[in-house]
Amino acid sequence: MKYMTLLMTLVLLCCGSKLKVTEVTSQKWAGGQYQTGKGTNYVVKVKAKASSDKFKIDGLWVNGLYIPVSLMMEAGKPADRPYKRGEELSWQGGPVYRPDDQGTMVLYRAEEKSAPVEITGAGVVQYTLRGKTKYQEFKEIKELEMLIYP
Image (tube, rainbow, N blue to C red):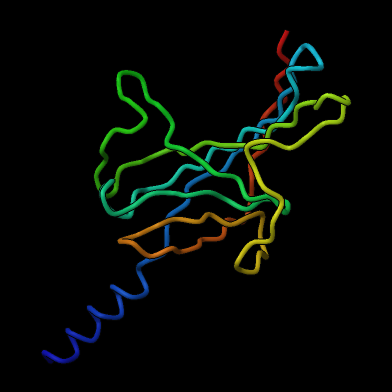
């Protein structure tokens, strides 16, 4: 019986390591002037797998782009605040396209590169848990209404 309990505990620890992505949203935007550019903001909502010293979201792959993300600021809390395991967190980032000197739109804040894992859904989140890089696929992206700035 002791061995069975130990085996079940090990199985739960190994299999329970997936990241819980609760929602991914995207919102396209465009500046009122051509020089401002355009882009898409992505927000990834997750439940923290561990405290801030052991867990963080590094970025995500969507449509052939690697997009670095950062923890979203909350009212009264800095973006680099510590957090605890199980806390609901939102990470944001997105590609930006701005014109260069010749007027051609150039990609900023993202890289065109293939994901290190196969993507069968909408995208993949890259995260670090206890010093190890891991990946979690998400199936859909909720698209929000486009913002057009004046």
